[in-house]
Image 1 (cartoon, rainbow, N blue to C red):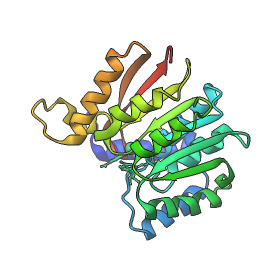
Image 2: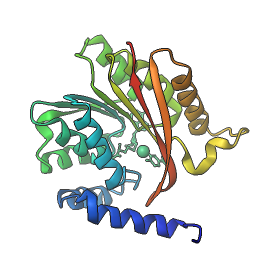
Image 3: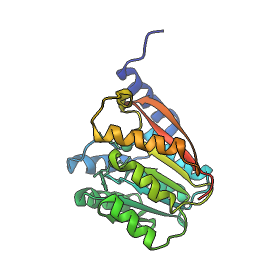
Length: 226
Ligand code: SAH
Ligand code: DHB
Ligand code: MG
């Protein structure tokens, strides 16, 4: 057995995508719109998108909060999973990204159950808290990693016992082990993971992943008491 390289990780992702995920053709058009708009290719893989959808389904989620919309890949996976009575609120600060995402949500037939909040995530989350929303069942944090600990703290204020919180990109090719890192995203990931490990209200883990997007990982937490 040789050590798997990045090409093999991507090939296995492609195999998994074709064999078990069975992503439909809406995502081809979503991809095309994102490419035409020159957006970065940093969306969740199909395998991860499907995992988010399954987490939503397993937890019986009806209300989802997302931070970081991009072109709406992860949004569409979760919006489908919450069903037509569900709602997804997703925060994005790039107007162009929000515009492309809106077109993609319409194409996917889920625009009626998704609200894009345009603005800096922290402002949007504070605004949301002020609106005293029904608690969210699932939270996906995937915008700037520097702000993640803050977003976590704000999201917990809109959670209930049992709310599931997923954080993306918590490994970054192992960069989180560079103890001297001055990268605000890496430092943000430390704060984010340490906050989860020391929180009396969260029970959490982090899982490393390899695939088409290289070596990374996600955190998974459940709110014990809010
Ligand atoms: N969840 C998406 C990918 C999100 S990429 C998917 O998997 O399909 C991260 C997104 O967060 C980008 O669109 C970026 O513009 C947005 N973003 C970054 N920092 C932000 C901030 N402070 N507030 C709101 N959005 C932010
Ligand atoms: C980056 C951001 C992401 O959300 C992601 O999944 C991959 C990469 C980035 O900013 O590089
Ligand atoms: Mg991400």
